Image 1 (cartoon, rainbow, N blue to C red):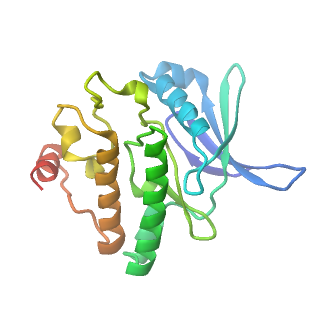
Image 2: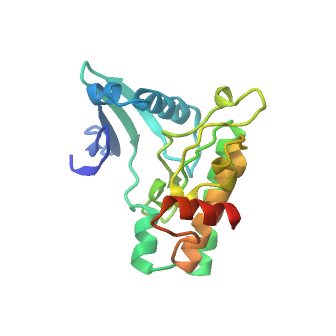
Image 3: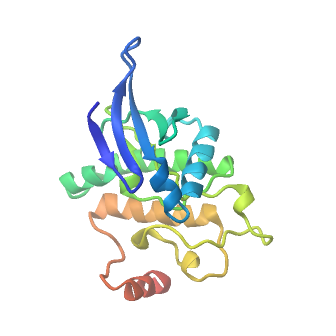
Length: 215
């Protein structure tokens, strides 16, 4: 099938079940590359383990996982409406009505994940897909955290996420609540949907993080 996207570890291709006609997105990962990159193996295992736990209308569904000597295949729900990022880029900003509807779906999906003990930690418009009915699907759980990743203090301690969406407490290296950091990222997404640009921007990462932390 056609290539839907490419990443560090492989490609995502569109596939069709010949018996049912149903379409899927198949993430094809190069095992050698995954094993050669530091932390990549853990990231892939984490995404598979996380998606296996989740079943919600606003979260991309994992149907099946298979592997050969050289490849790992993740058969995912096919979401054909593109990324939320693209929709915002085309429209420049969304109407309050559309933004409210999509944000409610985002919060529903994120709340469900938190109820399952899953913290996404990389929420951004590029990781929110839209189906042909205009409903969102949260994707890319490679940086997610589960209860076993919590420290003895009940907090997460790994700094991760995308610079413009990261919560200030994540930057402070004192431990953070995964659900609250996800909610911060959701707030940034809401801002972008309705205003059309990021609330915190700077090419210099140090200055950017100062803006986020001082807010």
